Image (cartoon, rainbow over all chains, first blue to last red; front, side, top):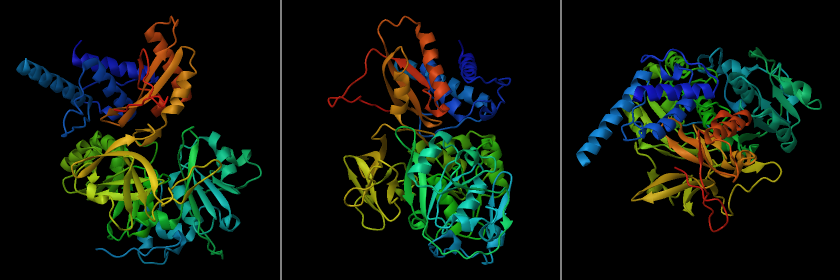
Length: 91
Length: 463
Protein backbone atom coordinates (compact mmCIF):
# COMPACT_ATOMS: atom_id res chain seq x y z
CA UNK A 1 0.00 0.00 0.00
CA UNK A 2 1.37 3.45 -0.86
CA UNK A 3 2.06 6.01 1.83
CA UNK A 4 -0.83 8.13 0.57
CA UNK A 5 -3.34 5.29 0.76
CA UNK A 6 -2.08 4.18 4.19
CA UNK A 7 -2.61 7.72 5.52
CA UNK A 8 -6.07 7.99 3.96
CA UNK A 9 -7.16 4.62 5.33
CA UNK A 10 -5.87 5.45 8.85
CA UNK A 11 -7.80 8.74 8.70
CA UNK A 12 -10.97 6.87 7.73
CA UNK A 13 -10.48 4.37 10.56
CA UNK A 14 -10.01 7.20 13.06
CA UNK A 15 -13.11 9.02 11.82
CA UNK A 16 -15.09 5.76 12.11
CA UNK A 17 -13.82 5.28 15.70
CA UNK A 18 -15.17 8.72 16.58
CA UNK A 19 -18.38 8.44 14.53
CA UNK A 20 -17.36 11.33 12.31
CA UNK A 21 -17.69 11.64 8.56
CA UNK A 22 -14.78 13.10 6.62
CA UNK A 23 -15.11 15.54 3.74
CA UNK A 24 -13.54 14.71 0.40
CA UNK A 25 -9.85 14.09 1.17
CA UNK A 26 -8.12 16.37 -1.32
CA UNK A 27 -4.57 17.71 -1.03
CA UNK A 28 -5.93 21.21 -0.38
CA UNK A 29 -8.01 20.13 2.62
CA UNK A 30 -6.87 21.97 5.77
CA UNK A 31 -6.11 19.20 8.27
CA UNK A 32 -7.70 20.97 11.24
CA UNK A 33 -10.84 21.49 9.16
CA UNK A 34 -11.08 17.83 8.13
CA UNK A 35 -13.30 16.97 11.08
CA UNK A 36 -10.27 15.58 12.92
CA UNK A 37 -9.11 17.90 15.69
CA UNK A 38 -5.54 18.19 17.00
CA UNK A 39 -6.04 15.25 19.39
CA UNK A 40 -7.24 13.03 16.52
CA UNK A 41 -4.33 14.17 14.35
CA UNK A 42 -1.95 13.37 17.20
CA UNK A 43 -3.40 9.85 17.35
CA UNK A 44 -3.08 9.60 13.56
CA UNK A 45 0.63 10.51 13.76
CA UNK A 46 1.17 7.90 16.51
CA UNK A 47 -0.59 5.18 14.50
CA UNK A 48 1.32 6.07 11.33
CA UNK A 49 4.55 5.77 13.27
CA UNK A 50 3.55 2.16 13.99
CA UNK A 51 2.39 1.28 10.47
CA UNK A 52 4.95 3.24 8.41
CA UNK A 53 7.77 3.41 10.96
CA UNK A 54 8.06 7.12 10.18
CA UNK A 55 7.55 10.28 12.27
CA UNK A 56 8.52 13.20 10.06
CA UNK A 57 7.54 15.76 12.71
CA UNK A 58 9.94 14.64 15.43
CA UNK A 59 13.00 13.67 13.47
CA UNK A 60 14.81 17.00 13.63
CA UNK A 61 14.84 20.19 15.67
CA UNK A 62 13.63 22.06 12.58
CA UNK A 63 10.06 20.92 13.06
CA UNK A 64 7.54 21.66 10.39
CA UNK A 65 3.81 21.63 11.12
CA UNK A 66 1.62 20.63 8.16
CA UNK A 67 -1.37 22.81 7.30
CA UNK A 68 -3.04 20.85 4.47
CA UNK A 69 -3.49 17.14 3.85
CA UNK A 70 -1.15 17.53 0.87
CA UNK A 71 1.60 18.95 3.17
CA UNK A 72 0.99 16.10 5.61
CA UNK A 73 1.31 13.34 2.99
CA UNK A 74 4.35 15.04 1.44
CA UNK A 75 6.11 15.10 4.83
CA UNK A 76 5.72 11.30 5.09
CA UNK A 77 6.76 10.72 1.48
CA UNK A 78 9.91 12.81 1.97
CA UNK A 79 10.76 11.16 5.29
CA UNK A 80 10.39 7.79 3.55
CA UNK A 81 12.70 8.87 0.71
CA UNK A 82 15.38 10.07 3.10
CA UNK A 83 15.11 6.83 5.13
CA UNK A 84 15.61 4.80 1.96
CA UNK A 85 18.63 6.93 1.04
CA UNK A 86 20.05 6.50 4.55
CA UNK A 87 19.66 2.73 4.44
CA UNK A 88 21.25 2.54 0.97
CA UNK A 89 24.23 4.67 1.95
CA UNK A 90 24.77 2.77 5.20
CA UNK A 91 24.19 -0.62 3.53
CA UNK B 1 7.46 52.41 28.04
CA UNK B 2 7.93 50.74 31.40
CA UNK B 3 6.15 51.90 34.48
CA UNK B 4 5.87 50.16 37.79
CA UNK B 5 2.75 48.10 38.42
CA UNK B 6 0.84 49.48 41.36
CA UNK B 7 -0.08 46.38 43.26
CA UNK B 8 -3.57 46.10 44.58
CA UNK B 9 -5.30 44.30 47.39
CA UNK B 10 -8.38 43.71 45.26
CA UNK B 11 -9.41 44.20 41.65
CA UNK B 12 -11.95 46.75 42.86
CA UNK B 13 -9.02 49.01 43.76
CA UNK B 14 -8.36 49.53 40.04
CA UNK B 15 -9.38 53.04 39.14
CA UNK B 16 -12.38 52.97 36.83
CA UNK B 17 -12.03 56.73 36.38
CA UNK B 18 -8.50 56.50 35.00
CA UNK B 19 -8.58 57.92 31.49
CA UNK B 20 -7.58 54.73 29.66
CA UNK B 21 -10.27 52.47 31.16
CA UNK B 22 -12.94 53.46 28.66
CA UNK B 23 -10.71 52.51 25.74
CA UNK B 24 -9.50 49.16 27.10
CA UNK B 25 -11.61 46.09 26.41
CA UNK B 26 -12.24 42.46 27.13
CA UNK B 27 -13.26 40.87 23.83
CA UNK B 28 -14.93 37.49 23.53
CA UNK B 29 -16.02 35.87 20.26
CA UNK B 30 -19.50 37.39 20.49
CA UNK B 31 -19.30 40.32 22.88
CA UNK B 32 -17.08 42.92 24.39
CA UNK B 33 -17.00 45.08 27.48
CA UNK B 34 -14.86 48.07 28.33
CA UNK B 35 -12.82 47.94 31.49
CA UNK B 36 -14.65 51.03 32.72
CA UNK B 37 -18.06 49.38 32.30
CA UNK B 38 -16.81 46.16 33.90
CA UNK B 39 -15.43 48.02 36.92
CA UNK B 40 -18.46 50.27 37.43
CA UNK B 41 -21.26 47.97 36.29
CA UNK B 42 -22.81 44.71 37.38
CA UNK B 43 -23.41 41.41 35.67
CA UNK B 44 -25.06 40.05 38.81
CA UNK B 45 -28.23 42.09 38.55
CA UNK B 46 -27.03 44.49 41.24
CA UNK B 47 -27.14 41.72 43.86
CA UNK B 48 -23.48 42.05 44.87
CA UNK B 49 -24.28 43.11 48.45
CA UNK B 50 -26.00 39.73 49.04
CA UNK B 51 -22.69 38.04 48.28
CA UNK B 52 -20.59 40.12 50.69
CA UNK B 53 -18.55 37.92 53.02
CA UNK B 54 -19.83 34.69 51.43
CA UNK B 55 -18.00 31.65 50.08
CA UNK B 56 -19.07 31.90 46.43
CA UNK B 57 -18.83 29.22 43.75
CA UNK B 58 -18.55 30.69 40.25
CA UNK B 59 -19.75 28.16 37.69
CA UNK B 60 -20.78 29.83 34.44
CA UNK B 61 -20.41 28.77 30.84
CA UNK B 62 -19.36 32.02 29.20
CA UNK B 63 -15.79 33.21 29.77
CA UNK B 64 -16.54 36.94 29.46
CA UNK B 65 -19.39 36.62 31.99
CA UNK B 66 -16.97 34.82 34.32
CA UNK B 67 -14.33 37.54 33.85
CA UNK B 68 -16.75 40.33 34.72
CA UNK B 69 -18.15 38.39 37.70
CA UNK B 70 -14.61 37.80 39.03
CA UNK B 71 -13.96 41.55 38.84
CA UNK B 72 -17.19 42.25 40.71
CA UNK B 73 -16.70 39.59 43.39
CA UNK B 74 -13.04 40.11 44.29
CA UNK B 75 -12.80 42.14 47.48
CA UNK B 76 -16.45 41.33 48.29
CA UNK B 77 -16.70 37.55 48.62
CA UNK B 78 -14.75 35.95 51.45
CA UNK B 79 -13.87 33.04 49.19
CA UNK B 80 -14.27 32.68 45.43
CA UNK B 81 -14.15 29.20 43.89
CA UNK B 82 -13.53 29.55 40.16
CA UNK B 83 -14.76 26.56 38.14
CA UNK B 84 -13.21 25.98 34.72
CA UNK B 85 -15.84 25.38 32.03
CA UNK B 86 -15.21 21.64 31.85
CA UNK B 87 -15.69 20.85 35.53
CA UNK B 88 -18.07 17.91 35.77
CA UNK B 89 -21.49 18.68 37.32
CA UNK B 90 -20.97 15.48 39.36
CA UNK B 91 -18.16 17.19 41.27
CA UNK B 92 -20.05 20.40 42.08
CA UNK B 93 -21.80 19.05 45.23
CA UNK B 94 -18.42 17.96 46.69
CA UNK B 95 -16.92 21.38 45.98
CA UNK B 96 -19.92 23.08 47.61
CA UNK B 97 -19.62 20.87 50.67
CA UNK B 98 -15.84 21.02 51.12
CA UNK B 99 -15.45 24.75 50.47
CA UNK B 100 -18.42 25.68 52.70
CA UNK B 101 -20.11 27.38 49.77
CA UNK B 102 -22.98 29.66 50.73
CA UNK B 103 -23.78 31.12 47.33
CA UNK B 104 -23.46 30.07 43.74
CA UNK B 105 -23.09 32.39 40.77
CA UNK B 106 -24.25 30.55 37.66
CA UNK B 107 -26.05 30.82 34.33
CA UNK B 108 -29.78 31.60 34.31
CA UNK B 109 -30.56 28.17 32.85
CA UNK B 110 -28.00 26.37 35.01
CA UNK B 111 -28.90 22.95 36.44
CA UNK B 112 -27.50 24.14 39.79
CA UNK B 113 -30.32 26.67 40.08
CA UNK B 114 -32.96 24.07 40.85
CA UNK B 115 -30.84 21.32 42.39
CA UNK B 116 -29.05 23.17 45.18
CA UNK B 117 -32.12 24.45 46.93
CA UNK B 118 -30.61 25.74 50.15
CA UNK B 119 -27.96 27.89 48.52
CA UNK B 120 -28.26 31.51 47.60
CA UNK B 121 -28.25 31.49 43.81
CA UNK B 122 -27.34 34.54 41.75
CA UNK B 123 -27.54 34.25 37.97
CA UNK B 124 -25.12 36.17 35.76
CA UNK B 125 -26.64 38.40 33.14
CA UNK B 126 -25.52 38.33 29.52
CA UNK B 127 -24.66 42.03 29.63
CA UNK B 128 -23.11 44.41 32.09
CA UNK B 129 -25.69 46.83 33.45
CA UNK B 130 -25.18 50.14 35.16
CA UNK B 131 -24.90 49.56 38.88
CA UNK B 132 -25.75 51.83 41.75
CA UNK B 133 -22.72 52.27 44.00
CA UNK B 134 -23.00 50.08 47.10
CA UNK B 135 -21.16 50.44 50.34
CA UNK B 136 -19.43 47.14 51.12
CA UNK B 137 -16.63 46.64 53.62
CA UNK B 138 -13.68 45.40 51.59
CA UNK B 139 -12.34 41.94 52.40
CA UNK B 140 -9.30 40.04 51.15
CA UNK B 141 -10.85 37.36 48.98
CA UNK B 142 -9.42 33.86 49.01
CA UNK B 143 -9.27 32.66 45.40
CA UNK B 144 -9.72 28.93 44.90
CA UNK B 145 -8.48 27.48 41.62
CA UNK B 146 -9.19 23.94 40.57
CA UNK B 147 -6.65 21.45 39.31
CA UNK B 148 -7.10 17.80 38.51
CA UNK B 149 -6.80 15.28 41.35
CA UNK B 150 -5.85 11.59 41.28
CA UNK B 151 -9.38 10.24 41.47
CA UNK B 152 -10.74 12.55 38.80
CA UNK B 153 -12.28 14.93 41.36
CA UNK B 154 -10.71 18.40 41.24
CA UNK B 155 -8.29 19.60 43.93
CA UNK B 156 -8.92 23.06 45.37
CA UNK B 157 -5.84 25.31 45.52
CA UNK B 158 -5.96 28.54 47.57
CA UNK B 159 -4.44 31.81 46.31
CA UNK B 160 -4.90 35.52 46.94
CA UNK B 161 -4.69 38.54 44.66
CA UNK B 162 -1.25 39.10 46.21
CA UNK B 163 0.09 35.65 45.25
CA UNK B 164 -1.58 35.71 41.82
CA UNK B 165 -0.16 39.11 40.88
CA UNK B 166 3.28 38.86 42.54
CA UNK B 167 4.91 37.72 39.28
CA UNK B 168 3.51 40.67 37.33
CA UNK B 169 6.17 43.30 36.85
CA UNK B 170 6.17 46.55 34.97
CA UNK B 171 7.22 45.17 31.59
CA UNK B 172 4.95 44.49 28.60
CA UNK B 173 3.12 47.74 28.88
CA UNK B 174 2.12 50.35 26.40
CA UNK B 175 -1.15 51.85 25.24
CA UNK B 176 -1.24 49.48 22.27
CA UNK B 177 -0.68 46.22 24.19
CA UNK B 178 -3.32 43.63 23.36
CA UNK B 179 -3.05 40.38 25.27
CA UNK B 180 -4.36 37.12 23.95
CA UNK B 181 -4.29 33.66 25.41
CA UNK B 182 -5.27 30.25 24.13
CA UNK B 183 -6.06 29.31 27.73
CA UNK B 184 -9.38 29.84 29.45
CA UNK B 185 -8.90 32.55 32.11
CA UNK B 186 -10.36 30.19 34.72
CA UNK B 187 -7.15 28.14 34.59
CA UNK B 188 -3.96 29.40 36.22
CA UNK B 189 -2.17 30.10 32.91
CA UNK B 190 -5.10 32.13 31.56
CA UNK B 191 -5.79 33.89 34.85
CA UNK B 192 -2.21 35.22 34.84
CA UNK B 193 -2.85 36.87 31.47
CA UNK B 194 -6.24 38.24 32.55
CA UNK B 195 -4.57 39.86 35.59
CA UNK B 196 -1.65 41.14 33.47
CA UNK B 197 -4.16 42.83 31.17
CA UNK B 198 -6.09 44.35 34.11
CA UNK B 199 -3.06 45.60 36.04
CA UNK B 200 -1.22 46.81 32.96
CA UNK B 201 -2.34 49.14 30.25
CA UNK B 202 -3.76 46.84 27.62
CA UNK B 203 -6.84 44.97 26.45
CA UNK B 204 -7.47 41.20 26.27
CA UNK B 205 -8.89 38.89 23.62
CA UNK B 206 -10.54 35.88 25.28
CA UNK B 207 -10.52 32.39 23.79
CA UNK B 208 -13.74 30.61 22.91
CA UNK B 209 -14.11 26.87 23.43
CA UNK B 210 -16.21 26.22 20.34
CA UNK B 211 -14.07 28.19 17.91
CA UNK B 212 -11.79 26.67 15.25
CA UNK B 213 -8.08 27.55 15.52
CA UNK B 214 -8.37 29.54 12.27
CA UNK B 215 -11.33 31.61 13.52
CA UNK B 216 -9.55 32.28 16.81
CA UNK B 217 -6.35 33.40 15.04
CA UNK B 218 -8.31 35.62 12.64
CA UNK B 219 -10.06 37.24 15.62
CA UNK B 220 -6.71 37.75 17.38
CA UNK B 221 -5.45 39.31 14.13
CA UNK B 222 -8.43 41.68 13.87
CA UNK B 223 -7.68 42.96 17.38
CA UNK B 224 -3.95 43.29 16.54
CA UNK B 225 -2.85 41.03 19.38
CA UNK B 226 0.67 41.93 20.52
CA UNK B 227 1.23 39.46 23.40
CA UNK B 228 0.02 35.90 22.98
CA UNK B 229 0.35 32.94 25.34
CA UNK B 230 -0.50 29.25 25.46
CA UNK B 231 0.84 25.76 25.91
CA UNK B 232 3.22 24.23 23.33
CA UNK B 233 0.21 22.19 22.14
CA UNK B 234 -1.85 25.35 21.64
CA UNK B 235 1.00 26.78 19.59
CA UNK B 236 1.47 23.64 17.51
CA UNK B 237 -2.23 23.73 16.69
CA UNK B 238 -1.94 27.41 15.71
CA UNK B 239 1.01 26.63 13.42
CA UNK B 240 -1.07 23.95 11.68
CA UNK B 241 -3.71 26.54 10.83
CA UNK B 242 -3.78 28.40 7.51
CA UNK B 243 -4.49 31.52 9.62
CA UNK B 244 -1.12 31.36 11.46
CA UNK B 245 -0.07 34.39 9.36
CA UNK B 246 -3.05 36.45 10.54
CA UNK B 247 -1.16 37.45 13.69
CA UNK B 248 2.16 39.21 14.17
CA UNK B 249 2.72 39.15 17.94
CA UNK B 250 5.76 40.87 19.40
CA UNK B 251 5.78 38.65 22.49
CA UNK B 252 5.10 34.92 22.60
CA UNK B 253 5.01 32.95 25.80
CA UNK B 254 4.69 29.22 26.36
CA UNK B 255 3.85 27.46 29.62
CA UNK B 256 1.88 24.57 31.08
CA UNK B 257 3.73 21.73 29.36
CA UNK B 258 7.34 20.76 28.67
CA UNK B 259 8.68 23.10 25.99
CA UNK B 260 10.88 21.36 23.41
CA UNK B 261 13.48 22.94 21.15
CA UNK B 262 11.42 22.09 18.05
CA UNK B 263 8.49 24.35 18.95
CA UNK B 264 10.84 27.19 20.01
CA UNK B 265 12.73 26.98 16.68
CA UNK B 266 9.57 26.82 14.61
CA UNK B 267 8.01 29.81 16.38
CA UNK B 268 11.25 31.74 15.85
CA UNK B 269 11.10 30.96 12.10
CA UNK B 270 7.38 31.77 11.69
CA UNK B 271 7.35 34.89 13.93
CA UNK B 272 10.86 36.34 13.48
CA UNK B 273 9.97 39.67 15.11
CA UNK B 274 8.58 38.20 18.34
CA UNK B 275 10.41 37.84 21.63
CA UNK B 276 9.80 34.23 22.62
CA UNK B 277 9.91 33.04 26.21
CA UNK B 278 8.76 30.04 28.16
CA UNK B 279 7.70 30.05 31.77
CA UNK B 280 7.53 27.41 34.44
CA UNK B 281 4.27 27.85 36.28
CA UNK B 282 1.71 25.65 37.95
CA UNK B 283 -1.47 26.27 39.93
CA UNK B 284 0.26 25.16 43.12
CA UNK B 285 3.75 26.64 42.63
CA UNK B 286 2.74 29.86 40.85
CA UNK B 287 4.98 31.43 38.23
CA UNK B 288 8.47 30.24 39.16
CA UNK B 289 10.65 31.55 36.36
CA UNK B 290 10.79 32.63 32.76
CA UNK B 291 13.40 31.48 30.26
CA UNK B 292 14.18 33.96 27.50
CA UNK B 293 17.34 32.59 25.85
CA UNK B 294 15.50 30.62 23.16
CA UNK B 295 16.58 27.26 24.54
CA UNK B 296 14.58 24.42 26.11
CA UNK B 297 15.16 23.64 29.80
CA UNK B 298 16.56 26.27 32.16
CA UNK B 299 20.03 27.45 33.24
CA UNK B 300 21.50 25.65 36.26
CA UNK B 301 22.32 29.10 37.70
CA UNK B 302 18.58 29.53 38.54
CA UNK B 303 18.94 26.90 41.27
CA UNK B 304 20.03 28.08 44.70
CA UNK B 305 19.85 31.74 43.70
CA UNK B 306 18.63 34.18 46.36
CA UNK B 307 15.71 36.38 45.48
CA UNK B 308 11.94 36.55 45.35
CA UNK B 309 11.75 33.02 43.98
CA UNK B 310 14.02 30.30 45.38
CA UNK B 311 14.52 27.06 43.52
CA UNK B 312 15.96 23.81 44.80
CA UNK B 313 16.22 20.35 43.30
CA UNK B 314 15.69 17.48 45.70
CA UNK B 315 15.39 13.84 44.63
CA UNK B 316 15.53 15.17 41.06
CA UNK B 317 12.30 17.15 41.44
CA UNK B 318 11.91 20.90 41.11
CA UNK B 319 10.89 22.72 44.30
CA UNK B 320 9.82 26.34 44.58
CA UNK B 321 9.56 28.83 47.47
CA UNK B 322 8.13 32.23 46.64
CA UNK B 323 5.33 34.70 47.45
CA UNK B 324 3.68 33.50 44.24
CA UNK B 325 2.89 29.96 45.39
CA UNK B 326 -0.54 28.91 46.58
CA UNK B 327 -0.99 28.95 50.36
CA UNK B 328 -2.77 25.63 50.92
CA UNK B 329 -5.22 23.06 49.59
CA UNK B 330 -8.85 23.33 50.64
CA UNK B 331 -11.06 20.37 51.45
CA UNK B 332 -11.21 17.20 53.48
CA UNK B 333 -8.18 14.94 53.39
CA UNK B 334 -6.26 17.66 51.60
CA UNK B 335 -2.55 17.11 51.25
CA UNK B 336 0.20 19.35 52.55
CA UNK B 337 1.26 21.89 49.96
CA UNK B 338 4.69 22.85 51.31
CA UNK B 339 7.58 21.19 53.10
CA UNK B 340 8.73 22.47 56.50
CA UNK B 341 10.88 25.14 54.82
CA UNK B 342 8.01 26.45 52.70
CA UNK B 343 9.03 24.85 49.41
CA UNK B 344 6.33 23.49 47.09
CA UNK B 345 7.34 20.20 45.45
CA UNK B 346 6.19 20.58 41.83
CA UNK B 347 6.51 16.85 41.11
CA UNK B 348 8.27 17.80 37.87
CA UNK B 349 11.42 15.74 37.40
CA UNK B 350 14.53 17.38 35.98
CA UNK B 351 17.92 16.16 34.82
CA UNK B 352 21.09 18.23 34.70
CA UNK B 353 23.27 18.07 31.60
CA UNK B 354 26.23 20.47 31.66
CA UNK B 355 24.97 23.86 32.82
CA UNK B 356 21.30 23.29 32.17
CA UNK B 357 18.35 21.42 33.62
CA UNK B 358 15.90 19.61 31.33
CA UNK B 359 12.37 18.47 32.23
CA UNK B 360 11.82 14.72 32.28
CA UNK B 361 8.08 14.47 33.00
CA UNK B 362 6.10 13.95 36.19
CA UNK B 363 7.15 11.84 39.14
CA UNK B 364 3.64 10.49 39.62
CA UNK B 365 3.33 9.46 35.98
CA UNK B 366 0.73 12.20 35.33
CA UNK B 367 0.42 12.59 31.58
CA UNK B 368 -0.06 16.01 30.03
CA UNK B 369 -2.15 15.73 26.86
CA UNK B 370 -2.20 19.14 25.24
CA UNK B 371 -2.21 20.87 28.63
CA UNK B 372 -4.82 18.56 30.20
CA UNK B 373 -3.58 16.41 33.06
CA UNK B 374 -4.30 12.69 33.00
CA UNK B 375 -3.77 10.47 36.03
CA UNK B 376 -2.85 6.96 34.81
CA UNK B 377 -4.54 5.34 37.85
CA UNK B 378 -7.99 6.57 36.79
CA UNK B 379 -7.70 4.89 33.38
CA UNK B 380 -6.06 1.75 34.75
CA UNK B 381 -8.94 1.34 37.21
CA UNK B 382 -11.40 1.42 34.31
CA UNK B 383 -9.37 -0.96 32.13
CA UNK B 384 -8.96 -3.40 35.03
CA UNK B 385 -12.74 -3.62 35.43
CA UNK B 386 -13.02 -5.19 31.95
CA UNK B 387 -13.56 -8.95 32.35
CA UNK B 388 -10.73 -9.83 29.92
CA UNK B 389 -8.12 -7.56 31.55
CA UNK B 390 -5.86 -8.98 34.23
CA UNK B 391 -3.80 -5.83 34.73
CA UNK B 392 -2.85 -2.70 32.86
CA UNK B 393 -0.33 0.10 32.84
CA UNK B 394 -1.14 3.49 31.37
CA UNK B 395 1.78 5.61 30.23
CA UNK B 396 2.54 8.57 28.02
CA UNK B 397 3.94 8.43 24.55
CA UNK B 398 5.68 11.46 23.04
CA UNK B 399 3.77 13.10 20.25
CA UNK B 400 4.80 16.09 18.12
CA UNK B 401 1.26 17.54 17.99
CA UNK B 402 -0.02 17.28 21.56
CA UNK B 403 3.25 16.72 23.42
CA UNK B 404 1.96 13.46 24.86
CA UNK B 405 -0.67 10.85 24.23
CA UNK B 406 -2.10 8.20 26.53
CA UNK B 407 -1.23 4.59 25.66
CA UNK B 408 -2.01 1.45 27.64
CA UNK B 409 -0.19 -1.84 28.04
CA UNK B 410 -2.65 -4.56 28.92
CA UNK B 411 -2.15 -8.11 30.20
CA UNK B 412 -5.09 -10.24 29.05
CA UNK B 413 -6.52 -12.92 31.36
CA UNK B 414 -5.62 -16.48 30.45
CA UNK B 415 -8.45 -18.32 28.77
CA UNK B 416 -9.76 -15.23 26.96
CA UNK B 417 -10.68 -16.54 23.54
CA UNK B 418 -11.86 -13.33 21.88
CA UNK B 419 -9.89 -12.27 18.80
CA UNK B 420 -7.28 -9.58 19.53
CA UNK B 421 -8.82 -6.96 17.23
CA UNK B 422 -12.34 -7.54 18.61
CA UNK B 423 -11.11 -7.42 22.20
CA UNK B 424 -9.24 -4.14 21.58
CA UNK B 425 -12.37 -2.62 20.04
CA UNK B 426 -14.45 -3.79 22.98
CA UNK B 427 -12.07 -2.39 25.62
CA UNK B 428 -11.74 0.93 23.78
CA UNK B 429 -15.53 1.15 23.44
CA UNK B 430 -15.81 0.96 27.24
CA UNK B 431 -13.20 3.72 27.55
CA UNK B 432 -14.95 5.97 25.01
CA UNK B 433 -18.26 5.59 26.81
CA UNK B 434 -16.78 6.53 30.19
CA UNK B 435 -13.81 8.85 29.72
CA UNK B 436 -13.30 12.24 28.12
CA UNK B 437 -11.55 11.89 24.75
CA UNK B 438 -8.06 12.94 25.89
CA UNK B 439 -8.07 10.12 28.46
CA UNK B 440 -9.02 7.34 26.04
CA UNK B 441 -5.83 5.39 25.19
CA UNK B 442 -4.66 6.20 21.66
CA UNK B 443 -3.22 2.70 21.50
CA UNK B 444 -3.69 -0.54 23.39
CA UNK B 445 -0.75 -2.92 23.44
CA UNK B 446 -1.36 -6.48 24.61
CA UNK B 447 1.73 -7.57 26.52
CA UNK B 448 2.62 -10.86 28.27
CA UNK B 449 3.55 -9.20 31.59
CA UNK B 450 4.16 -5.80 33.24
CA UNK B 451 7.25 -4.77 35.15
CA UNK B 452 6.82 -4.53 38.89
CA UNK B 453 9.46 -2.62 40.85
CA UNK B 454 11.15 -3.99 43.97
CA UNK B 455 8.76 -1.86 46.06
CA UNK B 456 5.86 -3.78 44.55
CA UNK B 457 4.71 -0.85 42.44
CA UNK B 458 4.18 -0.90 38.76
CA UNK B 459 7.26 0.43 36.99
CA UNK B 460 6.08 3.31 34.84
CA UNK B 461 8.16 4.31 31.90
CA UNK B 462 7.08 7.34 29.97
CA UNK B 463 8.34 8.28 26.54
